[in-house]
Amino acid sequence: MRVIVASENPVKVAATRDAFTTLFPEEDIEIIALNVASGVADQPVSDAETRQGAANRAGNARTELPDADFWVGLEGGIEVIDDQLTAFAWMHVCGRNGFASQARTPSLPLPPGVKALVDEGLELGEANDRVFSTLNSKQGGGAFGLLTGGRLTRESVYAQTVLLALMPFANELYPHSAV
Image 1 (cartoon, helix red, strand yellow):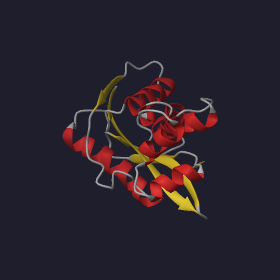
Image 2 (spheres, rainbow, N blue to C red):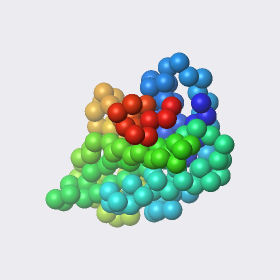
Image 3 (tube, one colour):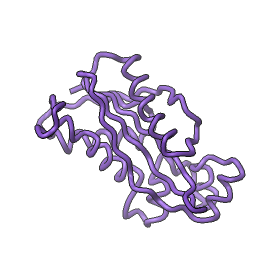
């Protein structure tokens, strides 16, 4: 099974690998990382924009490398709800038959100090690094790991969400199951 991950971020690649090997343990899975454009802002600031970015990434990866079984777009975003900055991500999985499925991570409430830096124009990863005195946290545990003391990580949450997005491909109850 050939899977294209529409990112070279090691967290996104590892999360995708984990989801596919968990759901398809008997398959020989080849993961290929491919940097493609999301077609949205570097820091998506709404649920809709983040969802669109994930779909765009998967579609752009499919256009660039059409010889695969799956294309996976992962896009992290933020949104302010009732003055609370939250972080989340969308996962978009497209299969070779053209069917696509999406799933969203839980929302993570972020500290006021992170919100203040984002309001000043910083991207979430950089704001987290400043508040938590870390370096390149978005390629590590991310805000999930920083705030939960490693109990959850960006990778673990993303892997679970990719797995959820894969359900229609692996469960016969869905009309598009084709694996």
